[in-house]
Image (cartoon, rainbow, N blue to C red; front, side, top):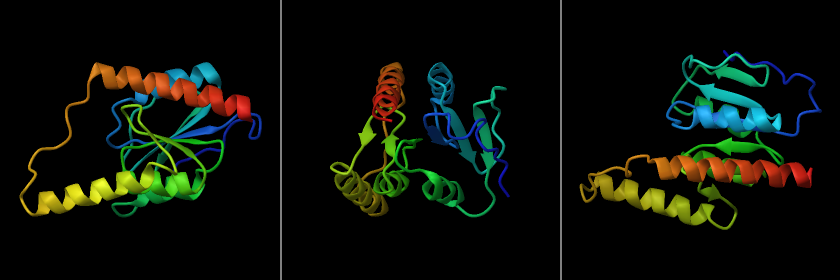
Length: 163
């Protein structure tokens, strides 16, 4: 089951930001930048997440398996949209569909970079399974948050000018 609303004034809003929300540390920043630019935000998760009350922010709760939120986003994101995720396979699907994709630290995924990101992800998974790598990613920092804010703003400005 999904709880999603169509964007108010569909067709007049420049694009949609899809947020893979379950582990997203930059949701407040997304809302702030999206509101400033008039973009709709679809916050997609497997469970209800608290959201600010705003006509441009929509909650989407998906039922189903492990990848249900990823599937929902990948089926909808396309050219002119932005996807926020650290999930490399989802990023790959969205890049292929023509969407702009940003990780929580502001790093963008593109046609040129997604192959290496997938290969690195797969290598790290194999090393973890073999017991060679036991640590996870470094902690999320204020520098990551700042880089994300800058990257999101720049992406929205670029897409708005192109549209």
